[in-house]
Length: 320
Length: 320
Image (cartoon, rainbow over all chains, first blue to last red; front, side, top):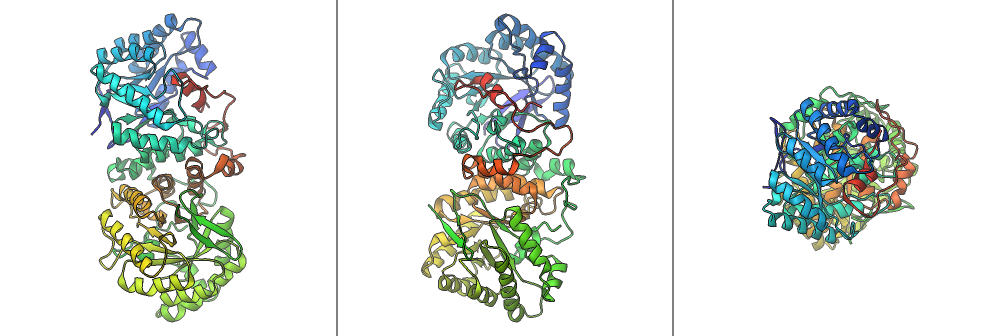
């Protein structure tokens, strides 16, 4: 069984097919957040602190830490800023972190100060990336996100993306890195632009799970880019990728609809034993939508062992 | 490609792997609804009419019609009541219907008056049922729901349930009924009582789709029986069963959360071309939950063809 172990100073988390879905909080990332970028560049970490606490409170399993504020020379400025951000967050919350940067020097600087066993985010199939990142992953004995694109870009052919993922896993093995420390990102495209984006990912996840036997992740909300009511698409996508074998995602844990989908999928996938987490979270749930009455099960008795229409209707219908 | 054709007086619907998920409205069923049972027994069809109109307005693809009011002798009373109910509904709405009864005489009486091509609900693997229902299915050239239990009850072993489904398909073929006219119900058990219930169904659906190549259905809300916030479990279950190959379900279309999950899964499964139905339904969607700002995509440009962290974050994150 594939087990990717990540850890904070004192807490260890396992990413795996038999584990609850690993929610990697995406909020601490200035990409596309001008205000946050300006704050971080000015040494103001108020929003970072707020985002860290809120994401943990909302149920994040891990937090992604990105300090890529737009800069003339990120190679000079990003290492210091990433280290500063990481140290603030790991001094504040005790959950595993992902070190997220496209700057190799920033990743190494963060690895030097990180407590526990962080996840490196990321390497790609590009030669330059492989040769820069894999030695660090080996040296610091940490897992890494492997994004399935290379010098030629992102292939629209899922088989090519699978081949890129396989190449990264093999190259990592050449460096002495075990496949269970590679978390493959099959790359999620916007379904509004590419109608096949969902089925591509499901097919890739199936092969990644059954052939490469690796854990997987993705930038989840990419799927809904450009569509109205994105949270509804995201909340439908989560159970589908979990059912197809995905074991983690970089996403916003502060969205109740998405987190509810994660919790439901954990119940249905058998990784919330006795539905304990679901029941603790929703036992006092009151439906918010107009016209709905109590959502809790009515007093009807469950159908007996005999099947057929009567048992089905008696046990199951939500009568309101 | 498996295609199960159902029809009303003028409208034909295809159930199939490449079709939008077929939502069979479950409301017109007095099982567990004492008030409705009393009304129907007294010849009052006000609730039936209301339920028919509401379910069609909510987006049902088909309507299930059950007139099984508790009675001393259903063999005498149910045929007449089912025919009456069916005629009222098919005079009111023009979508395909499912004739739902455990009384063979009621099914035949309804088949005699039904317009179009109704779905018979249901046959099981029980010898008596097979010999009673399959000749009617052949005579009236209609599709039938095949529930995967037999004289021994519902097996907890998915392989046995698969074997029962296979037996029904083979027996139907002996009667000259094509496999594409068999819609298998793999039987959904409550996940709160049986932690494996989800994975059992996903595994069965995979085999039913790939080995028997049949369409499938289920009493969907059974899965959440006994749990708090059942709609959340149902809404997570829907994308998972659709991803696993289920093509229809008997469910309540008047629940917005469940129908949103159906629509999202159709988008992601490639059966809502150009996301047209999603966009038409949710283009003016305003999130109801506290703290949420506009859910529509922000003005960020989608990432280019090059992958990696920056493209992923830029294209995908829902920033609010």
